[in-house]
Amino acid sequence: MERTTIYLDDVVKQYLLEISAEESKKKKKRVGMAEMIREALISYLKEKGKPVGDLESVKERMLSTKGKLSEGFEDRVKKVKKGFDKWEIESV
Image (tube, rainbow, N blue to C red):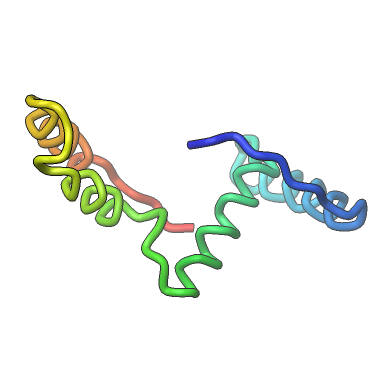
């Protein structure tokens, strides 16, 4: 993940803060603006046919590096993949 900066209108920021507070109360855990923006961007990109934010696309991208990086990398990727298989993904 990479940090970036975006500029928001005051009204958009206020709405995000309100929704953040509502979601935090519903889920009984803090839901920040950054998390909501990431989820919205992932939805938008998926709508545009870009495979992001799902476990399978992450695995595919990782395994597509086969033979392109240092020795032993493939084994490390396979080990990580085994760990991914145990994850439970909750859709947003």
